[in-house]
Image (cartoon, rainbow, N blue to C red; front, side):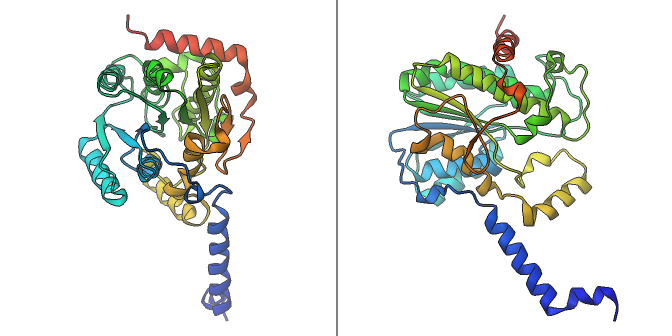
Length: 321
C-alpha cells in the first residue's frame, strides 16, 4: 500500500469534506443581513466599484431594501451588466449607473457635479472601489495610480458630497479598508509615487492605512452633523482585486480561498452592517472587522495629530488650483 492510497480512502474523503464544510460555515459572521429588517425606501445610496465583487453585493442588498441606488463604476459595459442584474434580482427599477474613474480627480469632480445636480439627497456613501498589485504608474494628476484609486479619489469624492449628506442627515459614510493596514506605513512622498516598493500588496497596505486615518479625522470634523464615517475590513475575500497579480499567485489564492476565504457576498456583510444596522446608529470614527465587531486599528491609525496632518495634505493635493 502506497501512502497516496490514503487519499482514496472513503474516510479520508468524508473527513475532508466535513472539514471543508465546517470551515466554510465558520467564515460567516455573527450578523446576518437577511435577518435585518431595516428598509431603505426613500433613501439614496452610492456604491463605488459596484459592477463586481463586494461592491455589487452591497448595492444588491441596498436595492432589495428599496433604496435608490447609484452604481458608480468605471466601465460602461460592466456597469450596465451589473445594473440589469441588480434590477432583475430585486425588482427595484430605481437603480442607476453613473460613470466615474476614481483614479482621476477630474472624473471624480465631474461625477460629483452630476450627483449634486441630479440628486436631492444622499444618505449612504460606500467607498468600495480599490486596486492592488498595480505596477508603478503615475496618473495625469501626478499621483501614484494605487494611491489615487484607493485613497485620494475616494477622499475627494467624499468631501465633494459632504454638504449634500449633511443636508440629508442622518447619513453614513463607509470606507472599505483592510486588516492589511497594520502592515502599512505613512510616508507622504508615497502619494507622488516616490519611495515605494511595488512588490505584491505593499502599496495597497499603505493606502488602506491612509483610509482609516482620514476617515477617523473626517468623523471628528463631522461631529454634531448626524453624518457618521467609519472604516471596515471586509475580510480576506476572493474578488477581482488581485487581477493585477501574476497568474500563479491568483490561482493559489483562489484555490486556498475556496475553503478559507470569504465570498464577495460574505465580504459585503461588514460594509452593509456599518451602512444600515441599527446597532451602528450614531457610531462614528470606528473601525469594524469582518465579523461586524468594532475593534482597534493599528496605533498609527489612532494617532490624532497624524490624522490632522494627513487630512490637510490630502485636501491640498485634491484641491483644484
